[in-house]
Amino acid sequence: MRPITQVAALVAALTAASPAIAQDGQTGERVITAHGISTFGDLHLPADFAHLPYVNPNAPKGGELSQHGIGTFDSYNPFTFRGRATAPSTMMLEPLMETVLDDPYVRYCLICETIEYPESRNWVIFNLRPEAQFSDGTPLTAHDVLFTYQTLIEKGFPSYAEAIKRMVAGAEVLDDHRIRFDFTPEAPRRDSIGQMGAQIVFSRADFEANDRDLTQTSNVPFLGSAPYVFDSANFGRAITMRRNPDYWGRDLPIKQGRHNFDRLRFEYFGDFDAAFEAFKAGIYTFRVEPSEQLWSTGYTFPAFTAGAVVKDEIPDGVVADGDAWVFNLRREKFQDIRVREAIGLMFNFEWSNTALFFGMNTRLDSFWDNSDLKAQGVPGPEELALLEPVAADLPEGILTDEAVTTPVSGDRQLDRTNSRRAAQLLDEAGWTTGADGMRRNAAGQTLRVEFLDHNQSFDRIVNPYVENLRAIGVDAVLTRVDPSELTTRTRSHDFDIVRDALGNGYAVGGGTSQAFGSEFKDDVFNPMGLANPAIDALIENASAATTDAENRTGIAALDRALRSLRFWIPQWYRPYHTVAYWDVYGRPETLPPYGLGVTDMWWYDSDRADALRAAGQLR
Image (cartoon, rainbow, N blue to C red):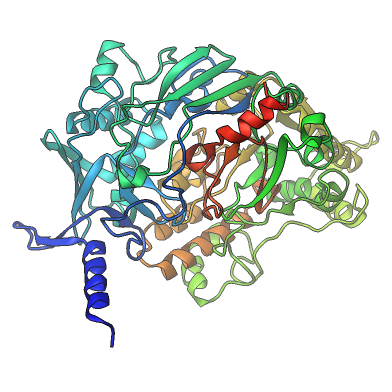
């Protein structure tokens, strides 16, 4: 038997973790008041938690974190297709509710203090914290939340606006600190509250004072309520954010041990080589290293040898980004799946991993790789129940074959087995080899395939791939453009193959529809222009999952179907972060599984910095 004191403590903990229950006077439903919401299961933190479990609540404040970007920027507005916005454009904007890095299915109140919703989740009321305010000291109210909602559906990205319109039937300000959203009858109830909780909040007064138009570029940063505010910029080249000492939420439990740097600086460089040289010189001090070659051979400069710069490999438990070369299905030559499969066969990952990647990478197979959500083997009974009604719109074998996986190649750049198979597929598709060795269709057109990219470090990866394709008669070329032209051409669908990230979250929702849904086939978030009724049905089914088991089955079936269509050439991922930094930073000993959290929970170590300066190592 437990001692009375332990029983009392247990009861108190359970009471704190449990939401309050009331009753809707009109419908008779139970109404829940809670400090957060979970997609599946219960919240893992009680309402009176002191801090997030993975942070150091005593982390010191101060110092600077500096990072790099490639290219340039000409706008502070990322909510429009016009212009190229800088990375921290939205850093000053806060959501109503916040995600955490140790549970992908929950959101906790931030600007709101509590939420109220019925068991049916037909509506939600956000009860805002009365102390919430923007960085200029003006109150953040329910009127600002309503203004933001209306602005985003009127002038935000069309795909986002349409998704919200289908989900929300109406919004009503109940008083200065309470706002209610009612959901449409057809909206999936599982994620609706969480999606509205993810909405950031604009200052209505700031929009009016600056005559802002969300559809246009802007050289005036947003006014927000977050811990960081705009400090200064060398427009197009660098931007600095500073921690707001008067941040309204600095004493909230969810903010303890977080947002520790006084300044966050982002330096932009014209190319990747210049960025690395700047890091070596200490012009910026934290780098997520994207290059396997540099990671393996480039860290021989004096500061690293002297121990002033450190390399760290940190486990990454997040679903892989889904990096891939993506076909533009709007172009007739790519509408034949045999052509897409043939082109995919000619990328030799095994040779690339050995010769170019120093054995550091793992080949992608799935849109949910680096997780246990991806489809594996042949479909089981639960998956078949979802796939059978839509099988007519998917390739043959979807009900009986193992999930499509990427081809395995040999240790030579040109794999002869895969080359023969690719040549056979192209012959069958009507692209036959002429006297000059190039493949042409019945109209005499060559099978021209242009890889469009801006990153010169990818040249050494794409060029051997191009050589392999040309060896079987494909008129393949690599065209490198500057970042602005890349943005313009991808947004206007003027490309054959372009790199993109098609990874997903831990549950299917509006973002999945934007990336793969038919109604968004002309949207920038659906780069390949995919439009398939089977995929639409599987997205709708997975979006409606209410249990973890249903979620897993729905994702596996969708993943299997997407992979069967071969509209991507999967690249690779690493199940760990490769980071390098000047040794002036501290971090929690054990990081959470779902995020590196550098700007979130790392901190500046002034003693280490002073030691490096004394040694003449740090600028």
